[in-house]
Length: 348
Image (cartoon, rainbow, N blue to C red):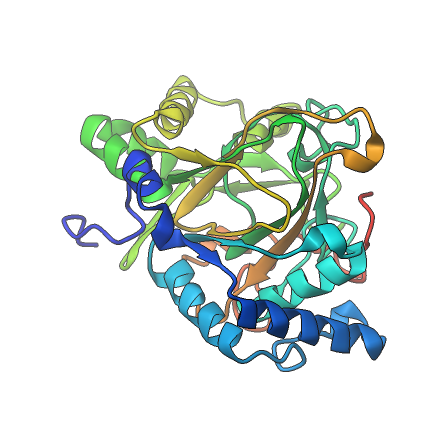
């Protein structure tokens, strides 16, 4: 790997925050008409959301926009923000179908949890984040910087929080380069496997933990996969080796770099906003938040995990310990054999 050539996804947060017009797309009136028409056609036909693919969600001008943004997600800066969808006057089903249809132009949805949810919900369910089986999206807690188990992750905002809940992004390649410059010894530590819990999210044919490096260096770049909360929860299992002092120090330094104001930046979500992020090149986070007292006004995002057949190159070691590959050879999310896919319209 030629580390002297920095790819477009090796950016610094403050500079990227100043270039908001480059990564924000406001849907034009024509695009909004196309999106609404495609969605309403599918609703009128009673189309099951699980059967909707790119060919079924027919677009014109907007298809060209999505193709351009897709290239930037996979080959450029690695994230985007769409604005302008009128979800405030749409029902949940209409918003979900439109979001799914947009996602279908970018990739193929994969399961996000052990329940087979290919349409996910990010909403506080009042669960305890410290428990091994609880995922951060089910709480209102602050989420440290991490990656998900798919090529792309997409979020559609139905309602923002009363306070907080900002999205934060950082280039994992920049984190890697900063660490390589200042603490190359810790880079080598994070190139060795870390044990993570997978309780409740693997089949009986696999152990309830995985071991995978944070930094996966290969001929065409550095793919990062990192979830420290899962590493911490894996330590609750007796058969998992104890973390070494070097591993703890390396993760502490990794987290400090990601949290450094010189590296990351934040953005607010408004109703109708859609954010897509490349998990291989970026880490994402969320500030803690306070919800409205009225349950109908509480923060609620829809989520997609997408597999892209022509996604960035990645080492097979990063998926063999997880759930393997999709039919098109991409990371397969979280899928327990025998559990059917579903797209619930309510958080559960």
